[in-house]
Length: 472
Image (cartoon, rainbow, N blue to C red):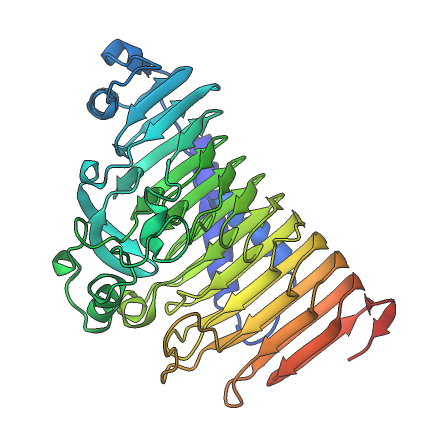
């Protein structure tokens, strides 16, 4: 081994050692300098690397702006690219109709500017794959773009990925609004979502949780399942059936410069779940649900997997419409730690909260070490910071798994209109929300400063709300 390679290997080992050292520190206290740790995390994330060999889909029979189904054409191009050692599968300008696209190792699917993929709205075009729905694993319709246990993969370019999910297509399956007709089948029917959640609770093998046709559970749009070293860069995604970008049980994921415009039901922009070393940067989110929502499994199924989401870095993003800008939960049973948010802008009368953590005693989970700095907020509806251990949107969400929320820090935050509350926090008496700090935070206008229940160790430094300095 050359001296240069020895030095590179030594540096990599040093970074791994330092990360391990930080993880072993006492988690019940705020980190001394979390932003140094963040830089170590971003340096440690593996980058994709591809051969320059290009496989233009036109050479495989693709014809833009026609009614041709390109599913098999794209599959052949990806297969040949993979078998020849990898490279770029190029989709040039034009519109292309297709079913699901499944990536292989060492393939960069590149959608050129002015290219648009129009994904089929016929559920029968989507085979069953191992996936998940709202935090419970199952066999369900394939996502539009999918990779399972792959390494070194990418979706890049300036093109558009169009899920065509509006109303009478996938969205009506949500069961209310979005074109749903009363009495028509939907995910709300007992044999659909409720049946899946029960399977998760009963530890039914995932291979036996068979849904798909006849069950009306919407697929996610772009899902990397148990993948390592992946890049999603530059593309625009519109009108997804459900969650838009979903790294699931994956490691070393970069989402860079992506634009998401999707206002359907459960249209979260990016949902890292059971994943680590995820870097989301330079993106724009305009969504029908949370802009970014960090997940870790639902209830019994989340505890079965027992895999936290950790080392999530979010930088230089813009959040427009959404239920929350950066959200943790509610599918969070495996826990979330080490989240870093910096240099983001959030602003819309339809954005409900800036930073939000949501869980309950059915979910449980430990949520800790959440750091936010250099945040600019124009308008939010409900709260700048919302921490809720009693989240419930439907049905009884109480149980015996009392959650933990600790170590949440906001620094250098400017808010014009904070809505109803600066901080809305609700913890358990036996498990109070611990260690919340605001430093250099200015909220020009808000109806009520705080609504705090069972919050322990909350601190303010150089913080002003409605023109008045706030003290501990």
